[in-house]
Image 1 (cartoon, rainbow, N blue to C red):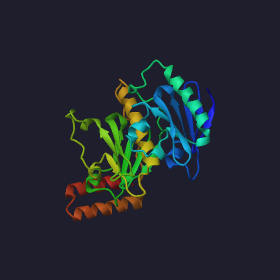
Image 2: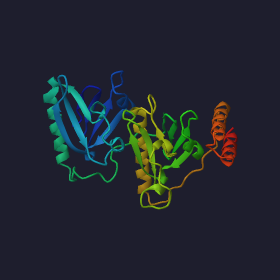
Image 3: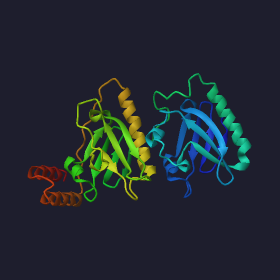
Image 4: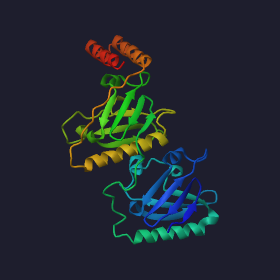
Length: 298
């Protein structure tokens, strides 16, 4: 193939073994599309292709991904709105004939494949968003450098449980998955699923049911953890977790370099810690140990 089909918010380029989707940049383009930029979807990552009437004089070409083929789709877990689905190309209705031609071409390419498109993919076939990635949640900042996920708590938003646990640095080798709940839904959050807390392992305590009390999770609020920031983050972590799990060699965790903190930020955090101590929510020992830890960051 190699032809190009331009639609609303995106352009699809049909190649011999894949579809290259390039998303437009503009105020009307969904922010998730802008954040993704472009994505190459191998034919083996697709299960089917549909062409259906859309809204207000449009048609929709939909390349349906296979289960387990795209970490972004797996992280979203069906929570994306139709308007935010990166596999849907919306076109003016007068381009229906052209869209049908490309849909048939793509169906033919899928039919020539020897694998069963109905079977889940054994590994991710679509490249995840590249690290480093970061975003601001309601109770902290989340960072991912490709090897580990870090949460740095805000003294104005983090729960006492998270303050007691301290900032988190979790290597992907210690995780078995990610749970993302859209910030557009009630009580959105991003939770890292620890291997030692997985059911049946018996090697560590279970993670708290409430994300607000789980040091391995950040919660979203109005204006915090938007889809176009937190979902690519979740997808990138998922892909890294799968890659780590597929490796037979033990995961080597590099030493974390010491980072100097802003003195004003440390002072605010010590002040908040003192308030928790005075309220009886932190013991004398916990207060002293955490205060020493914060001072050591200067």
